[in-house]
Image (cartoon, rainbow, N blue to C red; front, side, top):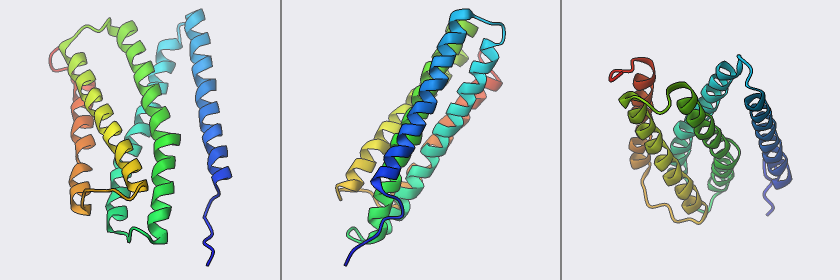
Length: 181
C-alpha cells in the first residue's frame, strides 16, 4: 500500500525558500532604509512589526489547535502523519520567521521611539518574552509529536491554547493604553 502526500517535500522546501527569501528582501530593504534614515522609516517599520506580530500570533493560536486534533488521532495513522507535516511547516515557514522579525523590528522601534523608557514598555516586553517561551514550548512539542512522544491530552492542549491569548491581551493593553506612562 502506497500513501500519497498532499504536498511533496520538494514543494515544502520551495515554500520555505520563498518565505525566507521574502523575509531576507524585507530585512535588506529595512536595513537600507535605516541606513539612509528617511522620514517615513519609523511608520513603515511599525507596519512591518504589526504584520509580523499578526503572523506570529496566528501560529501561536493555530499550532495548539492542531495539537488538539493530533492528540486525538491514531499515532500510526495517515492523519497523524499529515499533522506532523502541517505542524513542522507552520513552525519553520511561518512562526519562526515571524517571531524573529517581530523581535528585531520591535526592539528597534522600542529603542528609536521610546529609548526603552516606560514601565508599560517593560511589561509589554515581559509579555513578549512569555510568548517566546510558549513558542519554544510549542516547537519542542511539535518535535515530540513527530517522534510519537506527545504527553499531553487534547483537553490539555485546549487549555494551553489560552496562554497566548492572555499574553497578547496584556501586550496590547500596554501598547495602546500605556497605563504606567
